[in-house]
Image (cartoon, rainbow, N blue to C red):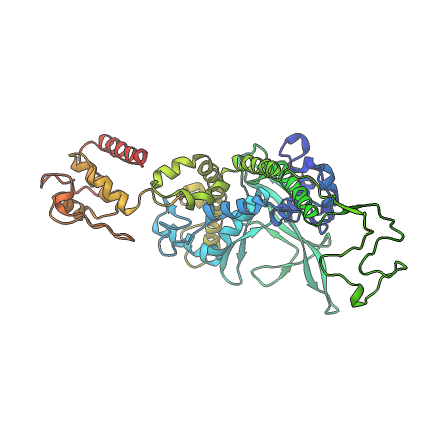
Length: 538
């Protein structure tokens, strides 16, 4: 089956419905829905540049003059990409930033950094998230480059992947990668040919226009048609954006397509109606069209003319007999009622995709703490965290494969790793979940929390060290009431010793790292109660 030969010749609603009965995981169905999703993203789904747009409009009973006035799809995709894989990578330690790694020792961290650098991960990570949010799936192909002594991860459009077979936990057992590419023939002329690579756990084989062809050069410099798989796994990951219980995933907007179509359908009709009302046709009575009506731009015989005296500007001027009447035929439009209907539809779309409401954060943040805002958007953060977890899982598997290959090839920075490293647990790590919202408390709010603390030095120490990121030594000094509380940032607030809770010198926390003194569970519960009360009060 050839991916690029399938194409979208006609639209079928079943292809974008994630149900097994409609063949969701079948290649023809899957490869037909990807272009539809991309057209929805680009706001061209009803434009004639899409050869199947007329079928699409007919299936959804949309007018032929429908316009893409509202495009929540593009906004939702961009927001998902920025919230799940946005930000800068910590290129020094990978402990913070867009991809914070947890559980990796120094040796593994250095290997992961090397793969990310070679993969230009600072740029490709958001492409990965954006493609998955658009299509529901995204491929990550691990490229082994012996000539350059490097291994890297490439984002692979899932429309280039066919005949995929998975094991019971979602790992790829076999697949074909197929797409059109340029090739210079023996005559020196470039031509477009069909490239295909078949891969499984046993080996690789390449083809040109369905015939075996040596695209690959082995380590000895020989061009080969096929070669063994030395890794023991297929270096391909298919990541799902949203797990719907099938092999391939759903995107971030699939459940709202009908409503988006309806919103644009109603809005387009309203806009056309307003246009007709602004420049309506007119009805003339007591007028003999053949003899009485004088139309600018025409001569008496009805032929057109370019004479300036017979031309009109944007406002035509007509001549009528004395007793004639002219009546506007402008449509009577309930603009307010129809506009409300459109807003109701858009609000319903926002309920389906609550992350769209996050653009209003800038309008509602005044007077609310970060925790309070976070609580207002739990439905949005829940969807974003689900997507983040799915994308992180795919990236982790791709990174583990890359390190195994780098160790197998003995590339610089991968000493001690090999294809058996995963089974030995040497590649165990995870990506720490990132905050969807900014830090929960502003500097001013944090000072207020410290001021509101009870007579509990352990709780005070816990908040100073873990919330304010103050060293344990400085926290002990502050609690002893010897110096002012340092708060940095915009709108600095300095609290004098006399304003702090009346904590007795010597009651500071222990020197055991960042842990509060006393029973940890009890202190944590007290801290959580204090933070909860502050958030509610906000």
